[in-house]
Amino acid sequence: MDLVIIGGGPAGYVCAIKAAQYNKKVILIEEKEVGGVCLNQGCIPTKTLLHLAKIINESKELSNCGIELFLNKIDIKKVKAHKEKVILRLRKGIEFLLNKYNIELVKDKAIFENENEIRLLKSNRRIKGERFVIACGSKPVYLENIPKDKEIIWTSEEALDFEKVPEKLLIIGAGVIGLELGTIYASFGSKVIFVEIAKQILPGIDLEIANYLKNLLEKKGIVFHLNSYLKEIDLNKRIAKIEKKEEGEITIDFDNVLLAIGRRPRSDELNLNKIKVDKYGYIETNNRMETNFPQIYAIGDIRKPPLLAHKAMYEGKKLVEIIFEGKEEREIFIPNCIYTEPEIATIGLTEEEARNKGYDVIVKKIPLAVVGRSLTINKSEGFSKIVFDKKERKILGLHLIMPYASEIIGEGSIFLALNLELEKIKDVVFPHPTLSEIIEETFLSVIKKAIHFYE
Image 1 (cartoon, rainbow, N blue to C red):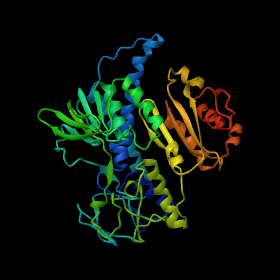
Image 2: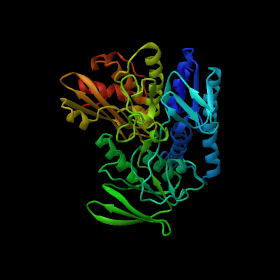
Image 3: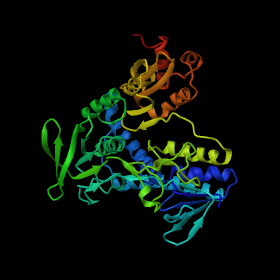
Image 4: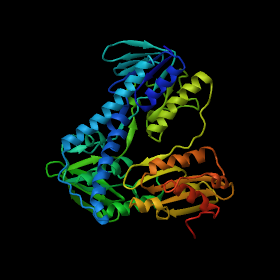
């Protein structure tokens, strides 16, 4: 066997298909379903539900344009069935591709017997391979002081497998997972309350953009308690005690609690204690994605942040090129997308990160309203922000908060990856009217050549 891959998520199945394109013999071992968390319990079901939430919100806003629509009810069983239909179709598509590429797919849990052999727990089958790829991903973090009751205390997995919409949903953690699920439940009718230990929502995201989104969500009735942490929960009374660092203790009643405090790598499930991991449990690798055992590689969430499906897919493809073409990993720009309303999409450094690294920073901001398309769709709230190094004349980061930001950031990814000079943007034709014109205006604002914005 040329390649034995443990984990059939975005990193693992993409790696398997890429290796098969090199005519290599591949076995892919997946404990549950192909597609991993992203397809079955993460990206795809979340975005399916977010799309429905967006339609609900827009139907309410149409009255401002002279159109009255009435939302009679939300049939949760049908919503759930629709979500499962989307998942199943994509899962069947991956299984079809694996079959066409003659990749052996085994539904089992794999553990290492030693660095040269794995054992499948269900079948007790032992597999030796020339190379092993660990791609078994991550799992939700659970607070030790919180009782385990999946009916009341949810992780993202239970929140996406709902049977009802709670009247009051308390979400611990205002990061990406919490905000996306909070957006869904707020649109479906829940009163959503966030508790976040950091001083801002979306820690790590540009502060100005995070605060802008927070203000918009507060206008929609979502409540945030920042710089706060969960002390304890009384399941019988459905009450949580929250410590606000500057104000003291408060009490919040709830119907359900969603723990959205992050994810951790599943490296503790491999039975390979000799493999090196960092203090967070991520498997340590070199620039060839090799672990401390040269025949064992690690890709995706289990390797290092960011925990993003497209980063995992990239590593799955890149690893095959490294192994069979002798290439090495290089620094890349990874876009990050947050599917709230409006969406956020970022790539590169934030303004704060750039200044901390010592760059001579220029920051330019363009309001979305200067782009005509935003007014035609009645969605003009938002802005774009570019972080530029004055000395080296290069783009350090691009940050968007606007409708369909996730669809537009790819253009910024291309410009950053190609290290394209801003002056050359003048020769790129953007279609009109489109939201993508914000990219052109933002980039050209740095060299004071923006057309529809004057400062």
